[in-house]
Picture: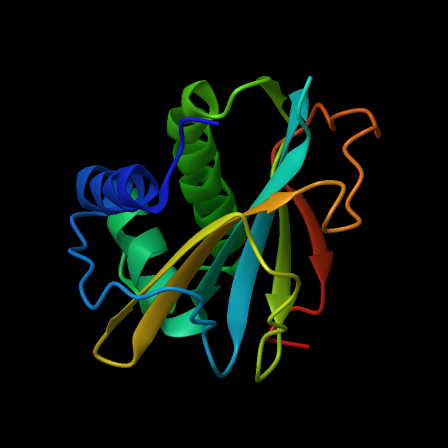
Length: 169
């Protein structure tokens, strides 16, 4: 594996800056957003299997989606926010995949909405977290075997799969 925390951090900062204009700051390891949040998971598979997990606070997810879609965040529906979170995860995974030895394929993102404190999960191989004005994002690369995750299910052919409870329900 050629990926490391430094180049993962560069990818995350670059994707956020290029796709949304949002400058991330306060890099640290293993932070998890508190409060309501969204997560997107993408399986990397091939000779090596693992999961890229991006967890983003609800307020930052709405800001990012508004910027990406050129709309005010208060007028966005939840599908648009979840699609934006999935697309950010997809861009990060696409840039990270060539740096992970044995990872040849990416799945479609699975996006979830979480109420209150997010789960910390298993110890990642790589991780970086950012916080800006009460808005946060956490990105982790988890070994599929160590994390108990399986990437053997066929990829979904539609846009990002959505599961979980909508914040409006």
